[in-house]
Amino acid sequence: MTSQPRGAIRGRSAIVAAGNTEQGTVPGISADEIAVEALRLTLRENGIQKSEVDGLITCKSYGGFGIDTEIGRLAGLNPGYSATLDYGTCNFSLHLACAVIDAGLASTVAIVYGTNQRSSGNRFSHPLGRQDEASVYGFLNVAGPAGMAFRRHQHRYGTTERDLGHIAVSQRRYARDNPLAIFREPLSLDDYLAQPYLVEPLRRADLCMISDGGACLIVTSADRAADLSDKPVHVQGIAQQTGLRDRQNADQWMRPWIERVAERIYPAAGIERADIDALYIQDPTSVWVLQMLELYGFVQPGGVGEAFRNGEVGFGGKLPLNTNGGQLSEAYMWGFLHLCEAVRQLRGEAGERQLDGLRTAQYCSTFGFMKAASTILSTDRS
Amino acid sequence: MDATTDGSVFWDQAGNATLTFQHCDECGFVRWPAAGVCPECLGRGFTWKPVEPRGTVWSWVVYHRAYDKSLRERIPYNVALVELTCGVRLLTRLTGFGSADPVGAAVEATFEDIAGTGLVPVFAPAAGGTAS
Ligand SMILES: [Zn+2]
Image (cartoon, helix red, strand yellow):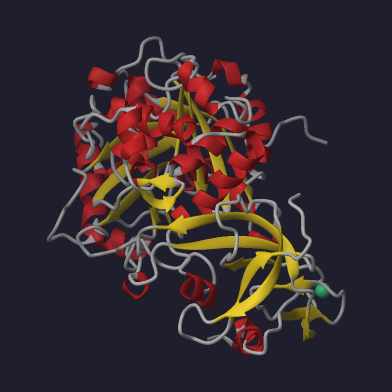
């Protein structure tokens, strides 16, 4: 018998540093070198010695890069523990780091990711379905399943393209105050609606662009955190769920199984959804933001447009959302920069974008149609 | 291609205007994409058998951008997901809907050569079908 909710790891681990390289086009440097550069900058900017790092968790990146054994060699590390995850978003890496630290396999884990997929020519068009179906019917890019999921949502709830447009418009407004962001030119709702369709009903602004860059987080035990940082950001709770049966699941591209994460994450962190001061949702497409806003219960199903118009979520609203601009406007760092931004906001280091009175932030992400994860972070240890 | 994920029987039979999928010999589960194992009972035995060529449109999109050179001459084109009565969810193309919203519509398979690779299933409004 246990009374402890799953993922209730409050007070046991903390993020002591978050950092990144420049974003956009970073030619003439390999993806692994970009990852190591992110590690170097993060350690230097946070005054942490490389010798403190005894755990390394990497993430595969386009072109077969991102393997821990290769990055460890480049970075001159012999960590006590290392691993490579086949997928990004940083949530899965962070949860593994927390478990590794809890198990005593390592005490301070560097999570790194680097990609040069823009410079090396990834067109983001690898088939998502089986080869035959994708090539025969031309079903390429995440815009296909995401567009279908949005159409289905429109059919069920009467959601309009204007409703969806609020997501990209709000994120662009945040990005205008973010010097790191690639897309900073103004975007109004009318500008959004005037964009041509790429995969109807989705437009350019609903889909993230490929970019190069690197990011890094340093995670350690809550007990050691004070030695490494004046402002540690504590991991309050974690939760995951998969939908690995893929298209055998009903409504798979609406990803209803994300709701299981929503049911677990608040008990895990010992807080209520209403306690979240800032929300981060990983966004290869705006449709994923729409889905997670609903599945985590931040807006009523079908109510996303109204929630933005009434100032409940988004820029200038009660619940700030993707204050970095997200993947749609900042950069395609596979969600890593959402966590970097959450850490900076909680530490009061977000410059022009700094929110007031922030204590608790939540990050929600998904690996396509396969996995979902969420983390709640806080300035408080417990 | 891995023999256990070989779906060529499906494409070959489409050439004969038939929808054919793997049926599990143990539990009867109908699966697609092709696989060497039944995801319900984990049995390895299967038989390719035709199914009723009817279903319901889950959703659809229209590609206005070619994400591969080979698709440049095809845009704009639609792609849909159809839920067949046998339980399989099949990627396909819709035809014959005009300006009507196909989501939830009853459809039946017809066969056309849309990619220069021979006949493949596409779906049209079912005769006497009603939207659900
Ligand atoms: Zn079976």
